[in-house]
Image (tube, rainbow, N blue to C red):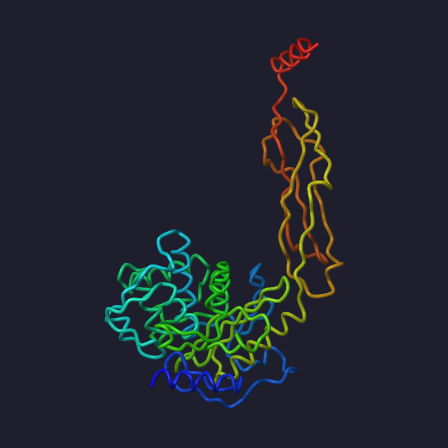
Length: 395
């Protein structure tokens, strides 16, 4: 029966982009189409809060009540997945490790893959279930495994990591996002943790899946994020729906060199969250471009060295990076270079000798240090005599 239900659900989704999806809390969602017209101002998107952020630089391109704490629903699972990926990066976990489902994990309500107590799945399978189907039992099983068997220990790590990321509007009470008193985040904070998760390119092997299965095909998975199928360049990331939160989504997409994160929270319907997220992404891709910095050490002459064993020192600058700009303003970017005409010996490698600033109409876009590329010792009487002796001996 479960398999038949999943197949019918998938068929409905393929037939209509606005078809209903199961909410992360297990509640039915209204399917009334309430998408805002394209000309609607961004500030009037049908979401209580939202933010559009550049994934590469963290630049905020649009915000609406971005720091208002709200129930985040299953968008919470972005942090759960982030901690799992960081555990793998640290060599403490692998995708093939097997996780045993506890009684607590098996008891999770809402969307699930119906794990049974004692059942085992790999980290990879549970990550797929979490990212694609927003399965609460899978997320809890992962959390307890990483937390040494304790949900509470994992939640402490969630909040500690949130603090490290600067998520000042956030307090996590569980790893699933099921409604709980005091469990809140904000659109800005969700964008921050989404950006951190996207630092792991391999996460998109889960977040871009449209349909898949577990248990050798017996458990069908259909992505709760319809943008994965219907939005060009979508890379994920996570939906959320509960009574307290309404409909939410953190949607990411990449086109060319631009990778954007669109977070909307507190929508009345699933259709509104996807139309709002799409509108923010459309705005970002149509109005912004990624400007690649091109400063190189070849454009700088060596700096004179006073009282050094060498008359000058070569310089270097690492100006590799990107700056997001409004389209059409790339040609207005100007370089401001300050470089010491002379420096007193001794000079140490990496010593700062100047700076390159990229400016746009008086605003600093980026700044790069110009550093000494080598060591230049100070000339002393003994050193001068030794150099003279070496020169004479060489003759």
